[in-house]
Image (cartoon, rainbow, N blue to C red):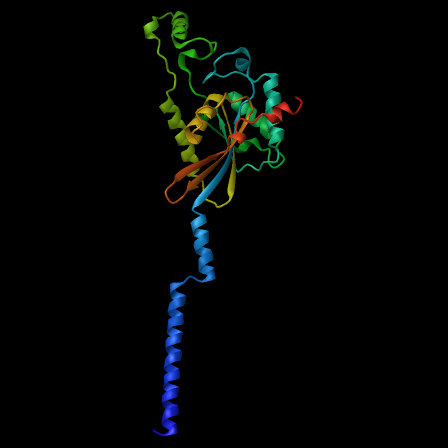
Length: 268
């Protein structure tokens, strides 16, 4: 074999080797995502989660709160103290940029919500408020509009006498735990149905003491929550996985039933 043939074989070998290395390189690139692909994959996995920071606010003091009357679905006006409390919680939250605002349709809550928003420096527009009976106080049936110390049996006697009917004919329409939980779930469903985005959405919810306490019990699993105070703020985080609409809650007890904004500021 002369030198020319040797050089020819070497050339063919090198060409073949380069071709194989090129093929291996291409296959490797196909099997591994590029940096851009990695970014897209990471983005798509994170954007399946929608996050809501929710501020639960109880209405201000009412005449019924002051006088020890059980309200439920009955409505009573805010006292002067309750009006001031609503203004103070508004001052505390005046820098909040609310994406959504939900409020019980009972007047004591709606008045509180409007007073709260009047102090907002970002957007004080009260037309943004969505009123809903899903956030109403728990119904206490025959005990409503009576002293908190009166039992159900005692309330039936009072109602029967007032209506001129037999005690056994008095119907107690008090709301069951299951019924309250069903309302709560319907409210969460409203949030699940909101348009998707990957930012943290700020939500204001103005409701009632019994309802908020039940909400924290059922979704934050806090079963020893103390009484929810007038115009207290309870901050929780809700995460919704848009792949299956599953929800999870993050609840720090130190961020619940907060009232320092009322204690530390003089009434105006």
